[in-house]
Image 1 (tube, one colour):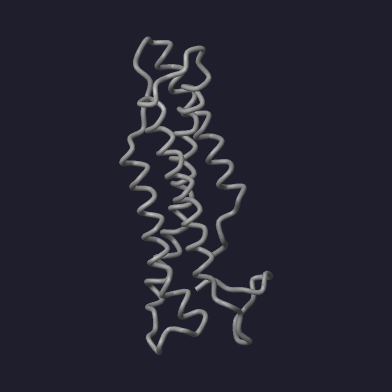
Image 2: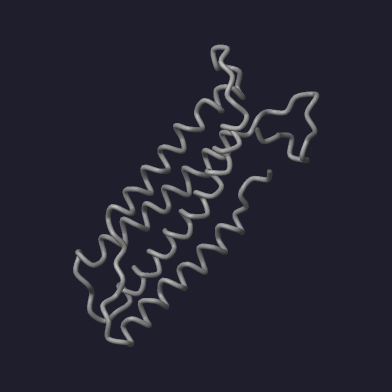
Length: 159
């Protein structure tokens, strides 16, 4: 499996940010209240990112030869890699959508209250943290090459 590409994350983020801005614009045009992400959403995204790092730690120890003789189940390693890849995309999606909402609020002629901007800012930060933690966890699951491994052209293989 190939690592998550930056172009994928950037593409998802751009589409989500434009969608967030467009949703708030459409709601305002209908004289409806604008969307607000919730603070618990941002905190949950942060906790998911931290949990991913803890899940990838045993795989990192095994790939570096410091696992005290205990082997990590290959299915577990595969699941962690897939979860990390999906989490990086979801983090970019949630974070960029919250950014679109935040940009819409801050681009108005009257600055909104902190109660309107803080939840979107926390969700944006949570999305960034989740994306970064997921990318780090994904890189932690890359095994160093051995002589028997087929190389993917970069000199490393994914566990």
